[in-house]
Length: 234
Image 1 (cartoon, rainbow, N blue to C red):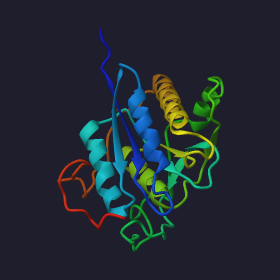
Image 2: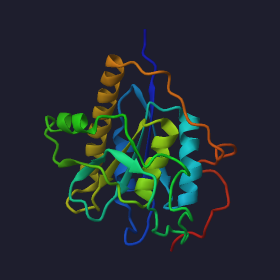
Image 3: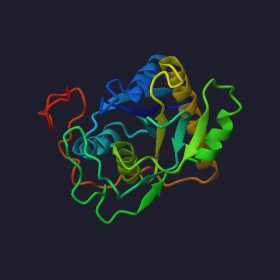
């Protein structure tokens, strides 16, 4: 019997601050060219660096695709490796987004847990990647930065009960080019799927469920017509 195809959603971010070309979205576009094989339906999205958009968009992506996995990719100006983030954090969001806005509560989810871990064993993924001979270095982190990267990750982890991942990449050319980042993402996601499937075979989970969210009805996905929350950044 033919196995059903898996849906995988991968997101990158649009421009912000000094990152007029965001390496995360460039890397995701390179991944889209490469694909994830015949057994995976890959869906990619560029996310604006806007808190309110993230709060609407992340639940919409989960509801639309019912994915096996969602992987968010962001750029870190301090990174020199490709970094797998273990968890997202709920509080401490003080940085203004592209709309010059930040949540008044400085948190993702009122009364949510302080942090949420991904159900994916990032240490196991990193260990498996070291055997592949990639031309990029891959490391582990537990601090995604308390800006839109961390905010997006926590929002997705909360929505999916931990069935999300986050990958930080360095700016382009510091030291990796777009092709290297795209190939690294493909290898990382393939290993994440492998680790996730192995974990579920050993410890069967209940059917995947999403948290109910008041923001879900009427959500608009990228590429559709909707008035923007704020003017485009020039």
